[in-house]
Amino acid sequence: MEKVELTQNLKNFYSNKKVFITGHTGFKGAWFINWLHLLGAQIKGYSLPPETESSLFNIIKPNMAFENIFADIRDKQKLKKEIDDFQPDIIFHLAAQALVRRSYEIPAETFDVNVVGTANILESIIHLNKKCTVVIITTDKVYENKEIEYHYKESDILGGYDPYSASKAAAEIVISSFRNSFFNPKQYDTHQKAIVSVRAGNVIGGGDWSKDRIIPDIVRALQNDKTIEVRNPAAVRPWQHVLEPLSGYLQVGMLAYTNHSKISSAYNFGPSPADHLPVNKLVDIAIKIWGKGNWKDISDKHQPHEAGLLKLDITKATKELGWQPKLNSEQAIEWTINWYKQTAVNFFNFTVEQIKQYQIL
Image (cartoon, rainbow, N blue to C red; front, side, top):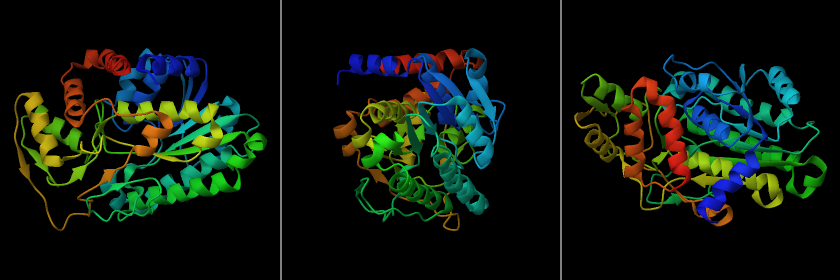
């Protein structure tokens, strides 16, 4: 599919579509509603309030028109009412407890949010009397990671060492159960629901201020002229700019809505096979783009376990969806660091500019 044609197809499809998004106040969610706004969608967001005053959501909110609901994904009755009232064409479920290290601090809550929250979304549409596609965002960490030189594909065994990874793998089992039990593709004409799960690699981009994430940690140190502290310098990850998986979500949402029987499954979104970087390389590139800085290794064998090697196979997405990454890892880091180098007054405009630039690549 030609680039210009795909961009126009997305605009034609999402224009005036009713899109319900959970987790819209988060880092990825804020980028996503901005992009959907540019495509002309009618948006209703359902999420907890943003955790920080400097969040990207707070920056973009005054510049956009959309329905905003602050509520908990675990409040099943509230969630169902908001979905019923809105009558969405497409639901994107991004709301989650999304941090590995935090999951060690609040393990039960992590499972509650990520597993029960996903079940609540899917139960809420069982009796929704209209055509609706649901795209549920999980993670690249849903696989039983043996930390070997291997690119995990969608048919591989699910697992999870830490509570976050395990909760997302459990969410995938919930998704599969609901798809088989209530939204079986063979009975689509009866229920008219397409259910897709998407597993993205390590996502970076402007506007992420989360604790214990490498880019926010780098930027905070650089802004304060401090040495960057790196916990796992040798860990290899499938780094990708936030717009890469979001473009995949948009594409799979469109295709699942129009070609439901083929697309109701799981998809990986990540960088090209040869384009996975260790953390220390990412830090070096970020420092080079920023123009100054230094880092030190603070790895500790007693710290909570985090995977040392993780790679994704994106063959299925490229073949079945026509999706492929546009930025290599170094470009993704450059786009990210350049965002943080803007002044606060330009953050919204620069976010829009990067979305438009990405669309024409």
